[in-house]
Image (cartoon, rainbow, N blue to C red; front, side):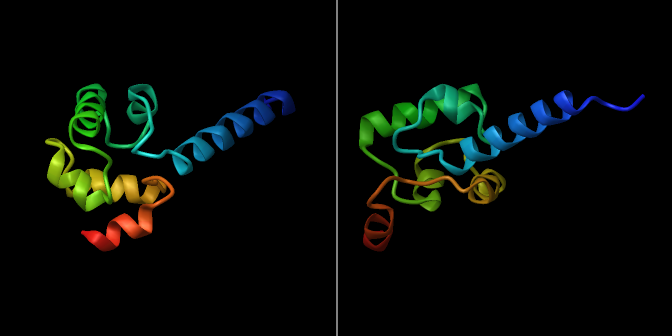
Length: 98
């Protein structure tokens, strides 16, 4: 059975949307729902990221995130890096301060 073009097109669009969502995730403004969609981030870690961000301010880098949030280790950092997460407009300046 050959898949229909409509199904293939729908699958392609869904894949494209998920790639764009990963690439544009800003860890300093993302909701728990968005964070849970990232590779290596589950419900508990997403809640911890939001709580830490609200309590102690924005994250400056993946290294900073890893230091501040329990459950974000090297494997998760590598997955987030590959997904292209960002840290807001002042990402480079904040990383230099670290």
